[in-house]
Length: 328
Image (cartoon, rainbow, N blue to C red; front, side):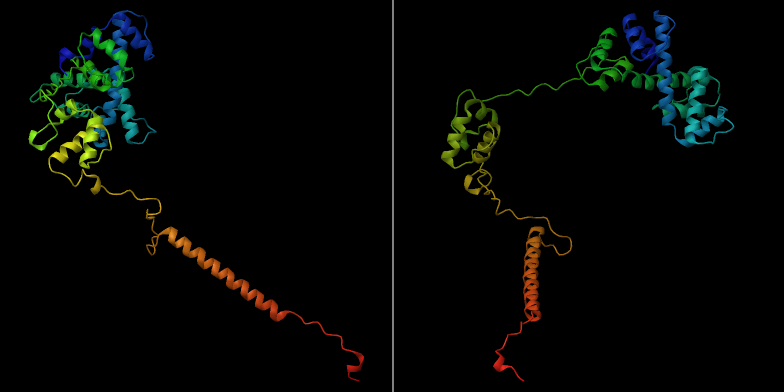
């Protein structure tokens, strides 16, 4: 992202109506709706979102290094943790302003650390001033990418039109990238393949070297199916699949094209239940059937035992004998 494509220059290409829509959509407070005021308010919000993103990208060691070198106060009661460093650094950068904060240090290491967190590498042998400008633009670029992601694709297209940028894509990410880079979102498409086929209908024979387009152009699906049935070739599928199967057959592939070589479908009774028990690799259905049989046999055995017990324990009633048979 160069100075010519800075976020400020991008905002200049928008109308006051577009700027007002952006401000109202993002709930940005402004004193009035003049162009300069609107642009300043939007740019401040974009910088704030960029700062938030960059402080999140900084690793803990780098975050601690920047805070220590810039004398960022953490507060007496706060522990030196990552969230505290991140919050205090972002507050300090927003309060002073991005450019002023970066200009307050003469240590290139601090600026390059922040610049790398913004996703860019420092220019070789660059001065402090150049590093600051590069870092400001990089953070604004990060913030603008996050800022415009809030809007829907139709509005992004309107902003592309307002900026005078060309596009031929409906990708939201691609439109945002082009918008913040002030670049066209035109994707060069490969030229369509030129389709050629024979000028006359040739018979379906191997010697004619028919292409896919030849067969597809000169033969209907009904004709192809009729030809396949005569040759014993499978006829299932769409026309595209049938054409490919005819080409394969003409090329000598009979194993995958003929009906007689097709695998018969398994019926429900033939389908093997493949869910195995982890202990002995016995199918669950088979194991369940075996268990049911064993339970039934146990029930029968238990019933027989109960009957035998009742038979043995059954009391025999005494028989009344005639008086003459009674023993005196």
